[in-house]
Length: 171
Image: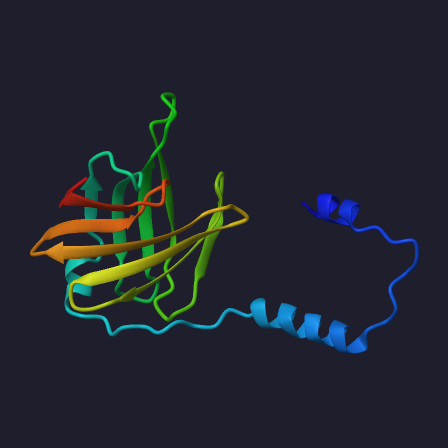
C-alpha cells in the first residue's frame, strides 16, 4: 500500500516546511499509537462458574467451534477452536492471554497474525470479548451469555450480519 501511495504523490518541487502541520501530525500519530483502557465491569460469581469449562458450538456464521475461558487466577486466558473452509484442516486451534483490565493482551504469532484479546463483564450473565488480529484485517466482538448453564455466543459474521448460536458444555 505504501508503494501505491508514494507513487501517487508527485511534485516537481519540495513542499515548503510546515512546522505546525508536522507537529500536529506527530501529535495525532502519538495519540493513536497509545492504547487507552476501556471501561471494565466487575467480575460476577459467574466468572468462577464458567472459568476453565469448554463450550462447543455447531457450525455457525461466527466460525466458532469451541471456546474455553479461564477468567480467574493470575493469568486469564482463552482456548478457541474455529471452523475453516479447508477439508484438509477442518478447524484451527488458538490460545492466549485475555486482558481483563481494559487493555488487550497479545498472544503468540499464528498463521492468521497475532491475536490480541480483551474482555469484560457487561452484567452478571454476559461477557464480551474484543478480539483483534494484529497484522491481519479483522476484528471480532463477541458476547458470551448464559441462560442457566447453557451458553449463547453472539457477534457479527463475515457478512456483517448479527449471528447468535447456542452452545453446550463439553469437549
